Length: 370
Ligand code: GDP
Image 1 (cartoon, rainbow, N blue to C red):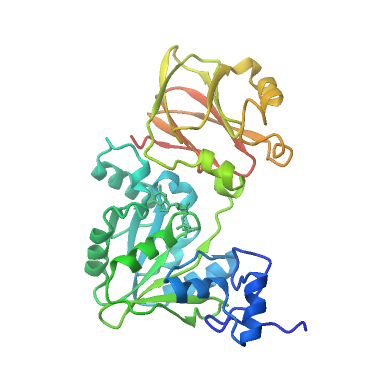
Image 2: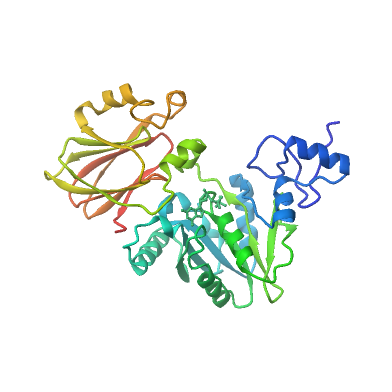
């Protein structure tokens, strides 16, 4: 009858259209709920019945309010990033909002990086990336929420740094924050019930409190959407084809200037100028189709083959897939040309290269991780 229904768990206005937004309830569940006189949104339903926290995302505006409310607290901030997509994990303006609260930086998805990497080197590198973004973490931890690698250790570190305070876990969507929270919930014994409690002041948003042993809480916060991630430009199946699922095996290429690598139809790398037979290393999903061709014919090659030989995007998706746009860089040291969410190409010093990505996906150069 047009009246707004509210979730009895979190108080969010119930809606049936946007799966990723607050208050989402499948049509059938809403009907059943109305019959029982108790409507739970899908998120609270899962929380009640499975102790499972589903991700929820926010508009920039609500997110800023949320961050402001966190900066008013005296707490430890646990900031979760995807080490495979650090740039795509950055929260715009986070440094302004954390105030004096210490930040523990957590690099997730360690299982994706090549095994030979020294963890201490990756930590130092991650810290530098954070510093460059104006964030000065008190500690850096590397974990895999998916394989549970070092979750115990992370919990110890949180205990050490929080000094009896509340803990707020923040991160953009897709970094694995929900997977981490769920893993923490499973590992911590003594958690009888998760609760969706008070709203964050000034937002329509509920918070999820995981009780710690001293009356304080570990608070899960909603993720903000980073539109530059590849994840927002490809749909489920295609995204799986380009997102690393397992440990990456780096692929080496000896390239001459004037050669191009296509990453299926989703990205492209041109070696414009530099020495002959230079070594380049690709870090991307192991099964991602990579095709080497001549730079001079590359535009035409793409136009002819995107959707078929160069897929994803598939034939029926290619009309909606954003055009690839060029981003040119010259290296003054060994660097990574990063295509957000897809991976990177490690390039030698003193070369000119162009990275192509769908319009809206960022391409950047950074000092080499490895
Ligand atoms: P959220 O949006 O930050 O809450 O992220 P999710 O927890 O929903 O995870 C986003 C995607 O990353 C999912 O496909 C997860 O399976 C995947 N993921 C999460 N943690 C890890 C991890 O440690 N390693 C790997 N390889 N994938 C992960």
